[in-house]
Image 1 (cartoon, rainbow, N blue to C red):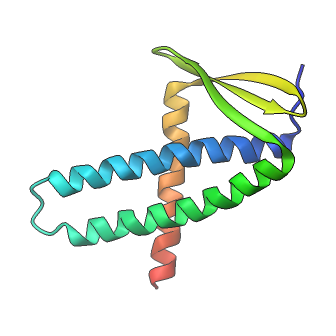
Image 2 (image 1 turned 30 degrees about the horizontal axis):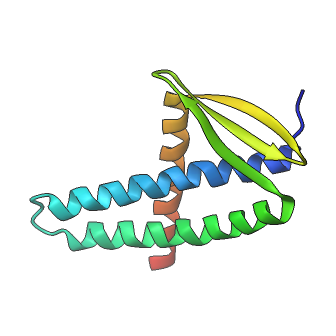
Length: 122
């Protein structure tokens, strides 16, 4: 039975995937720092701005989640799926996400962050 409202699910899942996108940005930044790129600064600046924007957005989502008493916890993982437990209103709702779908969702968030950062620079 579904206990989360659609809006709650959207807030909590966006927070979850945004957190994953931040982890990817941080990982990519380390690769750029260690890499043998001739000119690193433009890439580093882009990644820094993307992370800053993502962290601000995640902070707003976290405030909404705290206000609505929502939590998301990873509950399991295998080669194909990752399971998350969504907690709300004293209920638990388990959701399984196909790992390639998670990757696509995080990728789309990264593209959106790039686009937003680019628009701010104009």
